[in-house]
Image (tube, rainbow, N blue to C red):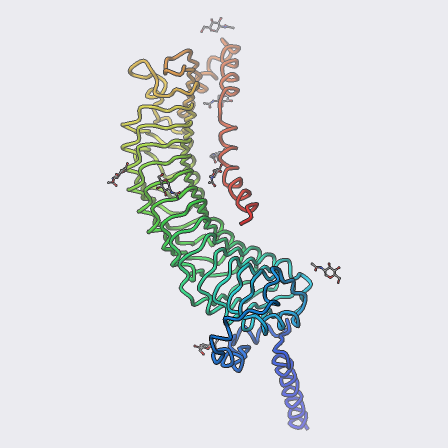
Amino acid sequence: MLSCSKTILSFFFLFLQFNRFSTAFGANEELNILDHNIMLVNTNATVPKVEKINFEATPPAKQTKIEDDCKKGLYHIENAASLNELQSKCWKVMGSIEVSSNFSESLVDLGSIKEIEGDLIIKNNKHVFRIQGYNLESLRKLELHSLTSFVSLDLPALREVETVDWRVLPILSSVVINGNIKKAKGIIISDTALTSIDYFNNVKEVDIFNINNNRYLETLSTKLESVTKQLSVHSNAKELQLDLSNLYTVENMTVKDVSAIKVAKLSSVNSSLEFIENQFSSLELPLLAKVQGTLGLIDNKNLKKLDFSNVTDIQGGFMIANNTELVKFDFFPKLRQIGGAIYFEGSFEKIDFPELKLVKGSAYIKSSSDELNCEDFTTPKSGRSIIRGGKIECTSGMRSKMLNVDEDGNVLGKQESDNSSEKKEKGRNGTKNQGSSKKMENSAPKNIFIDAFKTSIYTVLTVLFATVF
Ligand SMILES: *[C@@H]1O[C@H](CO)[C@@H](O)[C@H](O)[C@H]1NC(C)=O
Ligand SMILES: *[C@@H]1O[C@H](CO)[C@@H](O)[C@H](O)[C@H]1NC(C)=O
Ligand SMILES: *[C@@H]1O[C@H](CO)[C@@H](O)[C@H](O)[C@H]1NC(C)=O
Ligand SMILES: *[C@@H]1O[C@H](CO)[C@@H](O)[C@H](O)[C@H]1NC(C)=O
Ligand SMILES: *[C@@H]1O[C@H](CO)[C@@H](O)[C@H](O)[C@H]1NC(C)=O
Ligand SMILES: *[C@@H]1O[C@H](CO)[C@@H](O)[C@H](O)[C@H]1NC(C)=O
Ligand SMILES: *[C@@H]1O[C@H](CO)[C@@H](O)[C@H](O)[C@H]1NC(C)=O
Ligand SMILES: *[C@@H]1O[C@H](CO)[C@@H](O)[C@H](O)[C@H]1NC(C)=O
C-alpha cells in the first residue's frame, strides 16, 4: 500500500518535472521567470545551437548587404516577435534598439545581430531576466537601467563598446564578455550584485570610470592609464581592493570605502583628488607632482603611512581631517604652495611642511591634542605670515588663536582664547572672554568649508549622473 502510493507520487513528480522542462525549452526558446534556477545552473541550455551553426555558415558576401529595414535609426521593441524579426533580417542594425518597459518576456535575445551602430537601451523593465547576443561584436552604448529581475548578460563575442552605463541592476550577478575590450569612453557600473568586472580590465583610457554601490565587488584591478574626466570608486564592498597601478593622469578622482589601494604611478591630477572613509593604512603616491584642484584626506581611520614626497603644488584647497591614526603631518616634504585654503582637523600633534612658503587662502587648524604648537602659524618668525587669505585660526587642545592677515601676510589683529583658564577667570572678567569666544566662532570658516567638502563628492556624482553621453 505504502510503496504503491510512493510509486504514484514519484510518477506524478516526474510528470511535473517534464512539464517544467518542456515549457522552459518550448517552441520559441522563450523562458519564464519561474525558470530562473534552471538558467542559473546551466546558462548554455538556452544556446540555440542550430542558429549558431547557421550563422557561421552565412557567406560574408551576404553580410555586407544591409536591407532598408535595418536602417530605421531607432527601433522600439515591444515584444519578442518584433525583436525576432529584426534579428532575422539584420546582421547590422543602423540605429539604436530600445526595448520598451512593456516588453514582457524574460529573455532579450539579439540572435544573429552582429553590430549595432547606435545604442542598446533597456530601462525600467521588471520582466527581463536575461539579455543574450551570441553574435554581437560591437555597439555604441549599452545602457541598462532599473531592471529589477535582470540576472544575466551574455555577450561572449563583444569586442567594442563605447559606453557601458549600468545602474540599478540589483540582482545582476552573471556577465559573460570574453572579448578583449581595450577602448571605451565611459564605464559606469552602479548598484549591481557583480563580484567582478574584469572584462573591462584592459581598458587604458576612459573619460569616466565610476564604479559604485556594487556591494559584492571585492577586487577591482584595472590597467587604466588615463581618466580624462572622472574616476570615482565608492560604496562597494568594504573589502574592496583597488588596483590602479598603471594610472598616471586623472582629472577628478574620488576614492571612498576602499580597503587597499595601489596608485603609485599617479603623476598628475588636473582637478581634485579625494580619499574619504577608506580602510587602508597606507597611501603612496611618490610620483605625484601637482594637484591642480583640491586635495582631501578625510576620515581614513587606519591611515598611517603616506607618501606624497614629490608634491610641490596644490592649486585648490587642502583638507586633512579626522584621520585618527595620523599624528604627524610630515609627509609633504616638498610642498611649496597651496592655492586655496587649509583645513586640518583631528588629533594630530605636529604639522611639518618644511618648504611651504605660501597659502593663498585662509587656514583653519583644529587639533584636540595639546601637543600641537600653533605658533608656527600664528606667530610667524619673519613677522609675515605665509597665509595670505585673511584669517588664520588655530586650536590646540583648549586653546585657540585667531589672526587676521592682509594679502601680504602682515598681521592685522589677533585674538586668543583659553577655555581652560576662561573657567577660572570667568567671574572676574567674564564679558571679555565671552565676547572673544563668540567672535571667534562667527569668523571661523569651518562650516562653509566642511559643507563644501562633504557635498563635493555628491556634486560630482550628481553632475555625473546627469551627464548624457
Ligand atoms: C558552456 O559551454 C562551454 C563550452 O561549450 C563550457 O566550457 C562551459 O563550461 C559551459 N557552461 C556551463 C554553465 O555549462
Ligand atoms: C505600454 O503600453 C501601453 C498600453 O499599450 C501604452 O499606453 C504605453 O505607452 C506603453 N509604454 C511604453 C513605454 O511603450
Ligand atoms: C592633465 O594635464 C596634462 C598637462 O596639461 C596633460 O598632459 C594630461 O593629459 C592631462 N590629463 C588629463 C587626464 O586630462
Ligand atoms: C617629481 O615631479 C617632477 C615634476 O614636477 C618630475 O619631473 C620628477 O620626475 C618627479 N620626481 C620623482 C622622483 O618622481
Ligand atoms: C571630524 O570629526 C568631528 C567629530 O566627530 C566632526 O564634528 C567633524 O565634522 C569631522 N570633520 C569632517 C571634515 O568630517
Ligand atoms: C571655548 O568655549 C566656547 C563656549 O564655551 C566654545 O564655543 C569654544 O569652541 C571653546 N573653544 C575651544 C578651543 O574649546
Ligand atoms: C577684562 O580685562 C580687560 C583687560 O584684560 C579689561 O580691559 C576689561 O576692562 C576687563 N573687563 C571687566 C568687565 O572686568
Ligand atoms: C571635478 O570635481 C569638482 C568638484 O569636486 C567639480 O566642481 C568639477 O566640475 C569636476 N571636474 C570635472 C572635469 O568633472
